[in-house]
Every structure is written in structure tokens, then in C-alpha cells.
Image 1: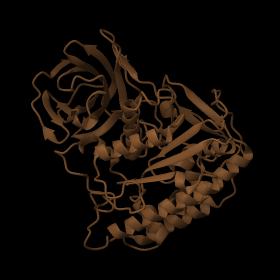
Image 2 (image 1 turned 45 degrees about the horizontal axis):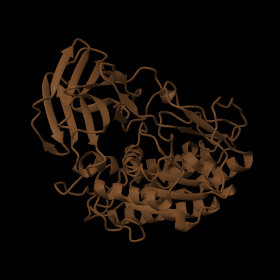
Image 3 (image 1 turned 30 degrees about the vertical axis):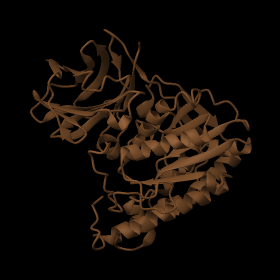
Length: 472
């Protein structure tokens, strides 16, 4: 998606192709649903809801709440449970959908803001149809497509706020949002997440997964996870559940198929974590389909994929932190395809990165990177490692980014290049072991970590973000 100039509208080439694509998608979406049936996954469900339950759904964009948890929301409302939904962004960066919806050949920052407002109205209408009142819909308004970048390198007084790709603003521009005029900084998002947890006091929390291909979906999980660590004494028993959205070519096949079941995405089938499947009644499936159809700004270019989520069940996963051990390598989660690319469902990962393991050593966090072939001149990997301590503000903790290629090592703390004295790199054929000193990580109690395989400095493979905890 090209950047926009705030001074003039954005020119768009070949508009006829966009209009034709929109007409084809709409015609396919209007086709009658298939009556084929599939077998439901043999997974445990969630306990029935009661009026004592308090359900918090965190949605990166307006429509994710309906796609991932539209059935759970219906069941919770019917049982008399309290439901609140927190939206991380206004979803104002889906440019192709906006072009098709408006049937105009340009976009501008002001137009993108108006589309963000329209998406907020769509979610308000959709959730009203599910019985969730407007006062329980919390819109934060942080930059669509930018929250993971904020997570990586926009913390503390020494860094500037992120400029939104769509609105060109560095502060939340939406007057009706809870976070109006707050800077696009990590501490702003984290404070808002903590406030919602302490104000609503949920018993169950639903959020997108850290393995999700969309950067905002990763960020929603990461910010929420830090907030939960900070308020663990107040909410010790809140159950965290994640829902899949952008996970390879899933759901498959596309289209509204109300007799079909959602199966575990192939890319996550080998994950050794607990999954849950919540069965929906035919009426709940029908209503979920109708509610998804209310997101007209998104249906215009992606109707078949969106309506694929209206099936006989919904899937949720319980994230499990990785325990660091002495002299025992703990493997990370499975490999993921390259970011921002339509992934194939091939069994082997793309790129040179074969797997990652972690170990606690006396000198620091040891990360072992397995390679699928010998390192070549343009190949390498990068590691993000963010320390966490309860007794120190997270924005003050180091945000380490390490990049290694052919014996060449660079290390940053957010955007600042720092010396890497103490960092050890040991290469052994198809394995590279990196040891990051505990002091460099801020003597952490826990660490958020991700590894990417690089080719020419571009990520071509990656692991999911993981939370590592000290087993002491």
C-alpha cells in the first residue's frame, strides 16, 4: 500500500481493474452457499456462560470481533454475562476496500479518517445486533497497520510517536475514541489496555493470536499480555484465549458454508497447546453471517473469505509461556511463512530458518537458531528480545533488536544502535547460538522474543512471538 501525501489526493492507476474485481467478488459472494458437510474437530469446549461471567474481546480492527468470536458473544449475551469489546484501531488503512467501496479513484488522509469513522459505525451496528450496547464498545483509535511498529520501537520519552500511514497523524485523531489525542506510543496503548482490564475486571479475555500474519493482530496480543502481567495480582484467574484470523489459507474452502466446521489451521496443527471448539446453533451461525455482512466496507473486496467464518463452531487456543530451563533447550513455536504474503500451506517453512530453541545460561539468554542450509553472504537472521520486570515500567525496559549475517553483528535498543559487548555468537555448521547478557535485557523476569530469517535484509521466515518465563 503506497504512502499518501497530506497535500493532495492519491492517484490510482487502472481503476477499471479494481471495479471489475469488486464486481466479480460481489457476484461470487451472492452465490448460494454449499450444502456440503464436514466433520467437527474432536476438541473440548468452553464451560457454559453464566451471569457471573465477564467477557472481554480485544479486536485489532472493526470486524475481527465478529469473525473470531461472534458466536461466543451471542452465547454470552444470551446467558446474561457482561460483554465488552475493545478495538485497538479504527481500521483506517484498508485502502483497496476503501477504493472499491467509495467508487472513487483517490484517497487522502482526511478520507481515510472518514472511512475509519464509518468502520466504527459498522461495528456499533453489528454489535447492537448481537445485543452488546454501544457503551460497552471501547474504540482506542491507534494507527491501523502501525501498532506492531509501535511495539518494536516507539517507547519512552526518547522516541517520537509513530506517524500513521493512513491519517499522517502522530496522535489519535478520532474525537469519539477513548484515546483521543494520545501519542502513538507503546506506553499509551499499554496504559489503555491496563485501564480496561482494571475497569471491567474480565473473567475471560479473547484476543487475536501472536502467530497471526497481520501485524496489528500480533500487537494486540503483545500489548494485552504485558498488561495482564502488570495486573496479575488483581486478575489472577482471568482466562486468556486467542482466536485465529489470518493464518495461512484458512478457513478453507472459502465462502459461506453453514453446515461446515472450522478445523485447526494447518500451520498450527502441530502446536502443543490446548485448543477449544465452541459449537454454534444454526440460528447463531445465521446471525453471525448476517452480522459479518453488515461490515460493508470490508465485504466489498473480501466477502467470500469473511463469510467463511460463519460456520458451525469457533476455535480458540490457550497460549502457554515457554519456561526457560538450565541446560535444557526449550523449542519455540512452529515456523511461520513470510509476513505480508499470502501463505501457502506447504509443510516446510519458507527461507533459511529451520527452528529456534531457548536456554537459560549463567551469562544470559541463550538462543539457538537452526539453519536449513549453510549461511550465504546475503542470508542471516534477526532476534527481538524485550525484557519484562514487574518492578520497572515496561517502557523503561530495553527493547533489543539483534541482526546477524556472515559474522557481522549489529544491535539496537529500539532505534538506537548500541555496542554489543558481551553478546556471544557461536557458529557450528547448521546451528548458530547467540547469548544475550542478562544486563543488556534489563535483568528480566520474563522476555518477549521473536526470530526472523533474513535474505538481503528482508524477512523470509519467522517464528511467532513467544513469552519466555524464568523457572526459578
